[in-house]
Image 1 (cartoon, rainbow, N blue to C red):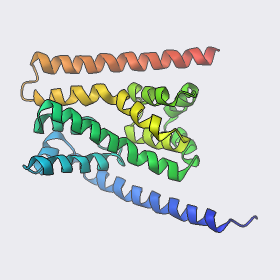
Image 2 (cartoon, rainbow, N blue to C red; image 1 turned 45 degrees about the vertical axis):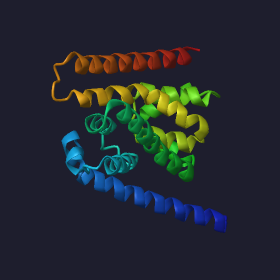
Image 3 (cartoon, rainbow, N blue to C red; image 1 turned 135 degrees about the vertical axis):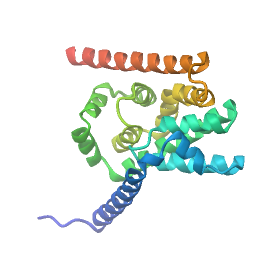
Image 4 (cartoon, helix red, strand yellow; image 1 turned 90 degrees about the vertical axis):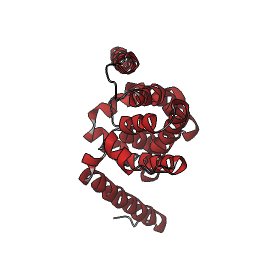
Length: 225
């Protein structure tokens, strides 16, 4: 059996450490998942606006390594805590944090992660059929269709070696609707029967349905070619 180089052994140790740290954080999120609700987030948020914004960024970073936390909770919480323009800006910044950390983890772990993701999440195989040289568009579609947890998509994109300069803006654009509609829902959460709240839900649901429908039509067309 061929001996592994010191560089290869060092990389494997690094990968093992990353996996153990990620597993520990995932376990923490799993054990505390019942606390990750809008009310739960608000109960732990400082009253100072700057500290609140910093705390929300921390929660977005925590979300980035956990499939157990629904990102919409954080988007909506910002809508409750801040005026709409500030809430949308914080959601964009938080989304950038959220999609970046697992992306870089995927880059470090390498292509072996892709096979494991596809094995555990068969829907991820559909991304391979849509992947082209247009990495920004591919990143946008992967986010817009929303068929996999955000963290898994980020990990997959990093492991596939998608350019970060194209991945990040494509991801933010693909999530932009949620970054706007969820804080609007949060602002009107005390009055869920209001037209603004209902319109936000309706638009979110309609665009999601169209995106998923378009995704499967394109996938089916590629299969037939």
